[in-house]
Length: 464
Image 1 (cartoon, rainbow, N blue to C red):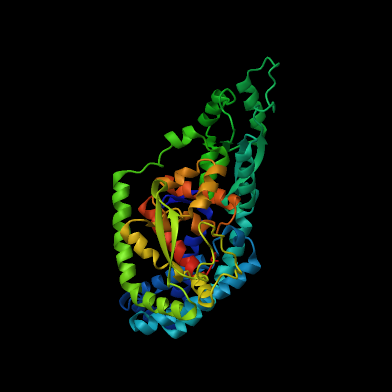
Image 2: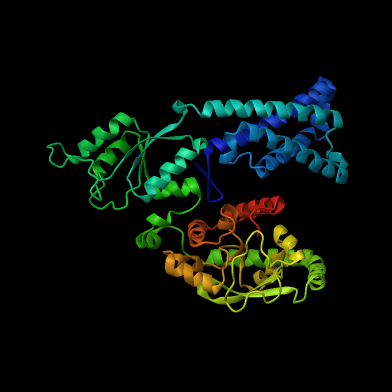
């Protein structure tokens, strides 16, 4: 795994993206030479911004491939799905570049070169994907990993690593710890526990040992692990690996001491200044651009159904303080009384005709720009919930109050990874993502979240 923007990305997936960007560029360079000949192609590439044009085209291809989930772990190994989505990418890139060339003709590559390169790219990427999948699925190219432990964290890691071959990690064994009555070391033997552990681990030829024990005190063979580390075996904490693989924290294995001493999870003054300054700047820009559209939407809501255009609702913010959230009204007025706010369903009878469209496109969220400007929220942060829902989550989910150490946001790490939440289990998983964000807050992570948010908005995912 490689850490970029304070988030983790599989090394093989990053290599796939970079290699495909290079292949797209080479395909269009080759198409240029095939179409124009050596002399004219060299002149075009060197003196007519040819390389810049091809670079822009390559970026457009990779962005569209990302937006169509062609680097998602659930899609990578399904070649039929890859083929279908690649066709969609070719069409989307063609339309996007046609619009760009219309607005700024000097960037146009040339119709003949573009069509030749487009056909070449389709063939090259399909062949490369199949070759990449064939090579990376070979067990000898995967890192051999042993999980040491048998608690919830160990089981979660086994499932995650088994379902994601693009990580290049192969779990070759699991050693159960001798807590909870699961003995792996023979205490009656004359052999020292450390030597016994080394004998047990040797047949696996492990390159990495992930320690995922619930209780380590008195159970961890420290000397044996240090000896393995000196031989080049990587020893990794299970929580650290779970965080890198999933992009969230393991709620089941969290301890108060970890929350207290872990790096991150604190609110520093520079971080507060950055969050507030960026929120004011972007909310001001957003309101300036969106205000005419917001006025038209407000008028349309009043004409569509009786009631106010703006829906006001109490939400829980920083340190548990209550604030009023603004949204465009998408439901029948006064359908929920008091604090009895039922989560929205996909087909909800409370929606107005216009409200369905507003929620599907997320336009109903635009008035939250006022909340961001006045300081109730940031652009990026944990999603604020209504007080009765927060009270229920506090009672049933450990460490839930930790969400309140930062201001809530209009979008967040949990929103781009988890989507809509309606049950306690949903909110428990969402907390795992929120804690990851709080631990890793940075400009890079915020930009990554905004980039993924645009993807969700364009594809209309996760709305209710």
